[in-house]
Length: 54
Image (cartoon, rainbow, N blue to C red; front, top):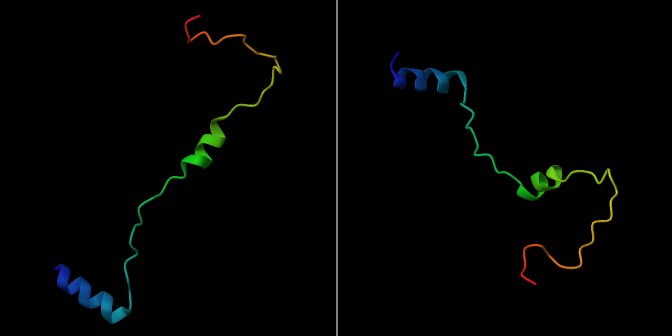
């Protein structure tokens, strides 16, 4: 069938195509999901950072 005939039939029957919307991702929500629970409850305080020179 020609696309014009399909358009005419859809208009006659009152049909309308649904438009797919672009998904928007909420990064703050996803970042909150990735944080693991503190199960071991260890005290990990450092006197100096290992990434910095002393």
